[in-house]
Image (tube, rainbow, N blue to C red):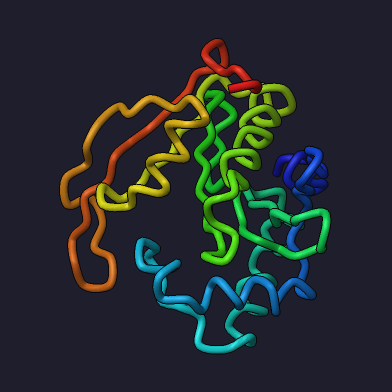
Length: 187
């Protein structure tokens, strides 16, 4: 159990608030987790209704309670809207390594939100969790996610051929990483 994830800290930028997800976020989260265009690169199917989303949010809050790696709600401060989710899906303290994953509402794409949010998450990982390496995977055909990973300074390390079977099809992923001494929060 890691106290960091039990009490996931709020992270702030002028435009964004990253905070723990709550069950009351279901309407905003459902808006993008139910969108087939947004979930096409994810291992799970679009949420059929808000009850599926509420169950997902309960599973995230259970991860917080257990001190397991978890993700933040990405909130647009001006409106209070949850525009996406990002954070740690793996944390290996013995190796000072973590892995991030993210999803973004199609309605909020193209504004630099995910890049801004993930820079804050990298900073928290390096400064608060004392990670040495943060990594991520992106499906080879997911150009938007690959672009975000490049913008936050992650280097492409390798290609994982037919790595996962997603929705009945084997998918190839690209592996990215950044080391603590390579991170520059202003880029």
